[in-house]
Image (cartoon, rainbow over all chains, first blue to last red; front, top):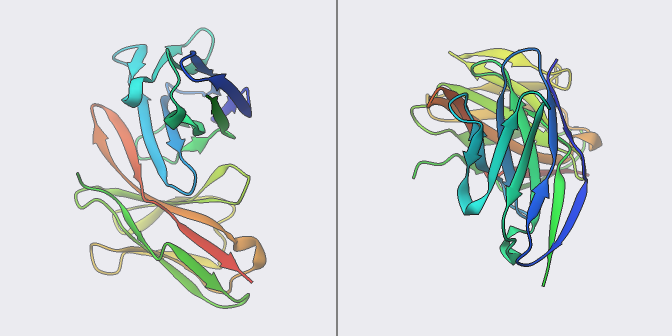
Length: 113
Length: 115
């Protein structure tokens, strides 16, 4: 079975400092991995997705994630946090084509001014 | 840019009543999904739908739930007799194969409150 573990339920950073949101996955098959963001009272927006083409994936708003098979990790990073990045972030795994997504528990990112 | 839409944005109902949540997926997509998120909990998969039939459903998706694509554009989730524990945000999604990856696009959600 596929699963996702987000290692931090809350992360707090100062504006302008780096962001690291950690995610580990478990999958019997070669996974597709995603990061989604949810701003308060909003829907789920795709930040980035992993395909087998490149292990370093760049997404919207300056976010990127690196797929590390040996560590079964897909951590999300951003060099410099902005106040508008404050939101909840979900690491997500999908295994089969057209299959369901399995969500992590989410990490709430707080950005301090 | 095409997007998934959902109506209503908020729905309040009495326990035991039937509700229908509506979604319009992106027009050329092939797979459709419903997820729900109970306040403070994970987003959970409910059901996927392909070629006019359910392709997979979770344990949550019991006989009280049903899905339908009545007219080739709408995709609906019906809860026959709502319970208090059905209160949640319900997300519709649709997907297509992009660059070798099935990417799911989510609607803004319907917040269902059962009193």
